[in-house]
Length: 440
Image (tube, rainbow, N blue to C red; front, side, top):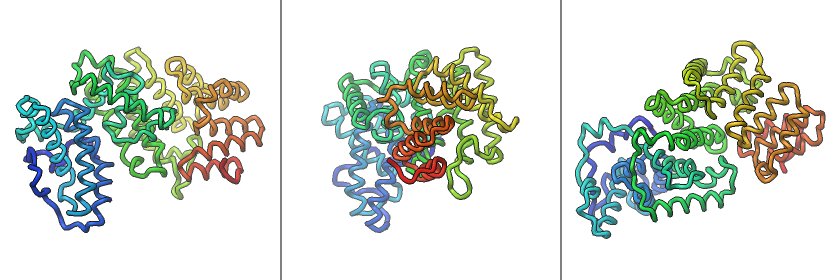
């Protein structure tokens, strides 16, 4: 879905509501069996964008989400029978707005300003000028409301704004899908109970919410980048979505070094992403990637962003992560990766952001810098419950065990990693690298 603006079909002249007996607008002659597929695609591609549009104008996140869910349900019911609308997004938005009005009338609020605002057609010039990136970014900030528990800020952004399911979000935060679903349900219940409004924070309030917004954007990028081969639709859209949001935020907050650090980090990763698979679709590990396949323009921009962030003298998580990626990219110039530098940078990252992922990266870099015995002890020190279902841990362990000459242990770890890998291309890489014949 586009991050630049609402599509032209959604800008001007949307009917404010439809009476219950009115025919559905603009139905085309698309064959009926296509209705389900079109509804599913609309749910996947348009949910977050339209929720953001509604919430921004209705100023109620929970109500907007409920209304869009009702509209999607109506699409599943009606499109297979009556045909697909010529403008599916406009159809969904019209039905959702009708739902909001009906609920407001039911609550005897029909004359409230928020309700009356929906009855007015948006000014055409304002609609042309209004851009969805601001709406969606505003919704990210709303999800970071101080009255919402901090651990659920970023997951709520990913589900409510980007439409990701709880299981996908759970995999990124190393929790069970059921636990993540419960967290999200409780958070949304809290929003309703506290009647939290869609209030875009003032600029002076950004500071407290900014870390969660950055985490949400990077979470979206990470999920999309790792989904390649497992979910083509997610893989195709989320990285670009996250990069666009990071650019917008960097434009809005040019003096925030962590914002610039996040943008640099995503640019480094995007710059190398074309080399992640070769011409035959085979996975290529970072240290084996052909630097000629990297996007030099994106990496050069990342370097500029990182230098600008460093000049502020306020290092943070995303600047350290970007610095690590910058060190990896030095292979473009010197022909080799400066592993001692990478290990040192990971050490600083662990100090400020001691996640399992950072600790694994620190261990691998330590091994590559010449201390595999120390590195394996670093992996041994990680909490078993935190890594038992974490694919990068087992892949890293397989690599380190092999560095230590323990081939049987390396194969066992590789089998665990294969069993946790959704992408068939990565499984094939593990299988060929470690000589295993199956997955545990």
